[in-house]
Image (cartoon, rainbow, N blue to C red; front, side):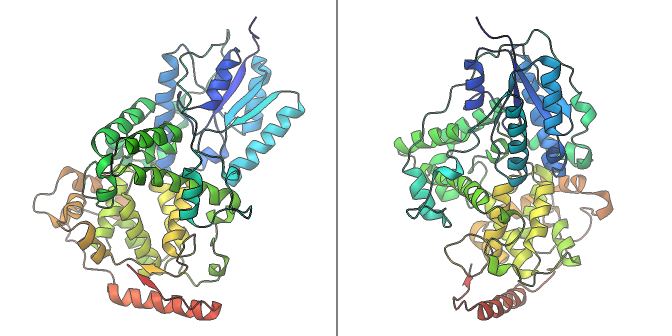
Length: 483
């Protein structure tokens, strides 16, 4: 006979039914299952856009579970205390969860596992967020990878098991514990009026994520490598970062689709798979060198004289620098909650190089504004651009936003799409920026577009001079790479 003692399924950033080893193991146990989400301090601390998007994901996942005769139990508080309280209320045999890898989550989960096991309870963590666990791939010398190319070769050569099929049913308990009301949590409070602007640009939930993957594979993966760097090319990228961030799709599902496309001869499929493994690389680095989240990954850059917050950085935040490529990218983020990857590099380079501002200010701003925020990818991306992070070329590159615009937005389609002041008849997307940003910024489409805040050549020369001084001090004789 089945054991009637339930298991608590502790959901975090894994809001899906397929490609989910924890769920498969839970169903295989035959026990009643209690899906739970805990709004603990770590979730409370999410940036405005990320917390709002998490709330959307929870609402959609709760609907999916309800369609199966299940419920998503919501509780607020310290994770261990909440889980222990639920165990006492329900007589649960223990807790299962999918692993997270940032230092705070690891510390929390380790504490939870130790406490529950000490009580003789089930406490099991499972893979599922990544293609491969960060500790399962190592260099020939047994260390961790610090450069992407050999990491890609090592990971791609392994092959991966097929994604775990979607569970079809979750055995419900006879009695349900009480649940908080999601609306009472006000997950989108910090978004204020920006939420209404951003909402139409979200594709929430597992069903939407799988449809998005199918659309991309069917219509765009073949041209992905050739067109992915051009932000004005509609549909050239998958858009799956939003769904991956909240676990609404599993990475092995995406990998399997990319591999099928490769075998069918789609030209961009391998590069698509490489971008998925770039995300894996970020987690690999975060696991082995967690300081990447808070200080220079290359420790020799800890003493670099970055500027702290400053008026120019605030103008950068407003998307009013007078550099159209930079401003278009920032405005895209405020309207959609996302930003094209090429554009992310440009805005990050402008802040850290031309404005000589600490990358951590940009990292924190993205964490507050992105609905596809991912702690590992965000940190690695900012450090890669700033030059303090992992890169086969240890010296600094300086992206010229005007030159990048000529190369990747030659018809100005992207810039005109997002900057109302550059068009005689601006579109809805460009105008909605003014509805999304805080009223205290006092911005209006009737205002003239600003002149360039700084001279790009002078800003670049100042940055290179500062980097050269650091290089001389540290004995680095490499020459700067200029993009």
